[in-house]
Image (tube, rainbow, N blue to C red; front, side):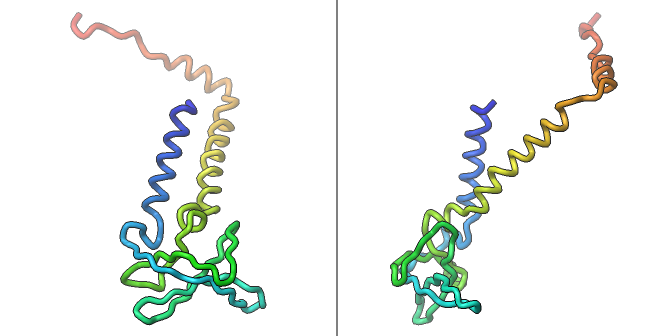
Length: 144
Protein backbone atom coordinates (compact mmCIF):
# COMPACT_ATOMS: atom_id res chain seq x y z
CA UNK A 1 0.00 0.00 0.00
CA UNK A 2 2.84 2.40 0.77
CA UNK A 3 4.22 1.83 -2.70
CA UNK A 4 1.15 3.54 -4.12
CA UNK A 5 0.48 6.08 -1.36
CA UNK A 6 3.94 7.66 -1.15
CA UNK A 7 4.31 8.43 -4.91
CA UNK A 8 0.72 9.73 -4.94
CA UNK A 9 1.54 11.98 -1.95
CA UNK A 10 4.73 13.29 -3.62
CA UNK A 11 2.95 13.98 -6.93
CA UNK A 12 0.06 15.79 -5.21
CA UNK A 13 2.41 17.86 -3.05
CA UNK A 14 4.58 18.79 -6.04
CA UNK A 15 1.56 19.86 -8.10
CA UNK A 16 0.19 21.86 -5.18
CA UNK A 17 3.51 23.63 -4.67
CA UNK A 18 3.93 24.35 -8.39
CA UNK A 19 0.50 25.91 -8.86
CA UNK A 20 -0.09 27.64 -5.51
CA UNK A 21 2.87 30.03 -5.26
CA UNK A 22 2.11 33.73 -5.00
CA UNK A 23 3.42 35.53 -6.98
CA UNK A 24 3.04 32.95 -9.71
CA UNK A 25 6.27 31.41 -10.99
CA UNK A 26 5.17 31.33 -14.65
CA UNK A 27 3.78 34.88 -14.75
CA UNK A 28 6.12 36.55 -12.24
CA UNK A 29 9.12 38.68 -13.02
CA UNK A 30 12.51 38.57 -11.30
CA UNK A 31 14.60 41.46 -10.03
CA UNK A 32 17.59 41.80 -7.71
CA UNK A 33 17.06 43.00 -4.16
CA UNK A 34 19.06 43.67 -0.99
CA UNK A 35 18.38 42.66 2.60
CA UNK A 36 18.13 45.42 5.21
CA UNK A 37 17.27 44.95 8.85
CA UNK A 38 14.58 47.33 10.09
CA UNK A 39 13.42 47.51 13.71
CA UNK A 40 9.77 46.73 14.33
CA UNK A 41 7.56 48.41 16.94
CA UNK A 42 9.12 46.37 19.77
CA UNK A 43 12.69 47.15 18.68
CA UNK A 44 13.44 43.70 17.24
CA UNK A 45 15.32 43.82 13.93
CA UNK A 46 13.43 42.12 11.10
CA UNK A 47 14.87 41.37 7.66
CA UNK A 48 13.26 43.34 4.86
CA UNK A 49 14.04 43.01 1.18
CA UNK A 50 14.20 46.23 -0.79
CA UNK A 51 14.04 46.45 -4.57
CA UNK A 52 13.11 49.06 -7.12
CA UNK A 53 11.01 48.86 -10.28
CA UNK A 54 10.52 51.84 -12.59
CA UNK A 55 12.31 54.08 -10.07
CA UNK A 56 9.82 53.15 -7.33
CA UNK A 57 11.32 51.46 -4.28
CA UNK A 58 9.43 48.60 -2.62
CA UNK A 59 10.07 46.87 0.69
CA UNK A 60 8.77 43.39 1.51
CA UNK A 61 9.03 41.09 4.49
CA UNK A 62 11.90 38.64 4.14
CA UNK A 63 11.58 36.88 7.50
CA UNK A 64 11.14 33.13 6.98
CA UNK A 65 11.65 30.56 9.72
CA UNK A 66 14.93 28.67 9.40
CA UNK A 67 16.25 31.13 6.79
CA UNK A 68 19.13 33.32 7.93
CA UNK A 69 19.77 36.41 5.88
CA UNK A 70 22.66 38.83 6.39
CA UNK A 71 22.53 42.62 6.22
CA UNK A 72 23.31 43.76 2.67
CA UNK A 73 22.98 40.29 1.21
CA UNK A 74 21.93 40.36 -2.46
CA UNK A 75 18.88 38.22 -3.21
CA UNK A 76 16.45 37.57 -6.04
CA UNK A 77 12.90 38.89 -5.77
CA UNK A 78 9.91 37.51 -7.69
CA UNK A 79 6.98 39.88 -8.13
CA UNK A 80 3.73 40.27 -10.00
CA UNK A 81 4.17 42.57 -12.98
CA UNK A 82 0.80 44.29 -12.48
CA UNK A 83 1.30 44.74 -8.71
CA UNK A 84 4.98 44.84 -7.67
CA UNK A 85 4.09 45.29 -4.00
CA UNK A 86 3.02 41.63 -4.02
CA UNK A 87 6.51 40.19 -4.08
CA UNK A 88 8.44 37.44 -2.39
CA UNK A 89 12.03 36.45 -1.84
CA UNK A 90 12.81 33.80 -4.46
CA UNK A 91 14.51 31.04 -2.50
CA UNK A 92 13.97 27.29 -2.10
CA UNK A 93 13.10 27.72 1.55
CA UNK A 94 10.47 30.39 1.80
CA UNK A 95 9.12 30.48 -1.75
CA UNK A 96 8.97 26.86 -2.89
CA UNK A 97 9.02 25.11 0.48
CA UNK A 98 7.19 26.61 3.46
CA UNK A 99 7.23 25.06 6.91
CA UNK A 100 3.50 25.37 7.55
CA UNK A 101 2.53 23.67 4.29
CA UNK A 102 5.01 20.83 4.80
CA UNK A 103 3.84 20.30 8.37
CA UNK A 104 0.16 20.32 7.36
CA UNK A 105 0.77 18.00 4.40
CA UNK A 106 2.31 15.45 6.75
CA UNK A 107 0.07 15.86 9.80
CA UNK A 108 -3.33 15.91 8.07
CA UNK A 109 -2.93 12.48 6.38
CA UNK A 110 -1.51 11.03 9.60
CA UNK A 111 -4.46 12.36 11.61
CA UNK A 112 -6.91 10.99 9.04
CA UNK A 113 -5.15 7.61 9.11
CA UNK A 114 -5.32 7.57 12.91
CA UNK A 115 -9.03 8.48 12.82
CA UNK A 116 -9.75 5.73 10.27
CA UNK A 117 -7.93 3.14 12.37
CA UNK A 118 -9.68 4.31 15.54
CA UNK A 119 -13.09 4.06 13.90
CA UNK A 120 -12.55 0.59 12.43
CA UNK A 121 -10.38 -0.95 15.16
CA UNK A 122 -13.06 -2.40 17.47
CA UNK A 123 -16.31 -3.02 15.65
CA UNK A 124 -19.47 -3.78 17.61
CA UNK A 125 -20.34 -7.50 17.80
CA UNK A 126 -23.83 -6.69 16.51
CA UNK A 127 -22.30 -4.90 13.51
CA UNK A 128 -20.12 -7.94 12.77
CA UNK A 129 -23.16 -10.25 12.86
CA UNK A 130 -25.11 -7.89 10.62
CA UNK A 131 -22.23 -7.80 8.16
CA UNK A 132 -22.03 -11.59 8.09
CA UNK A 133 -25.78 -11.84 7.44
CA UNK A 134 -25.59 -9.40 4.52
CA UNK A 135 -23.66 -11.73 2.26
CA UNK A 136 -24.52 -11.57 -1.39
CA UNK A 137 -27.05 -14.12 -2.59
CA UNK A 138 -25.62 -16.75 -4.93
CA UNK A 139 -25.29 -15.48 -8.47
CA UNK A 140 -27.71 -16.90 -10.97
CA UNK A 141 -27.08 -17.39 -14.60
CA UNK A 142 -28.38 -14.67 -16.85
CA UNK A 143 -30.56 -17.05 -18.86
CA UNK A 144 -32.00 -20.03 -17.06
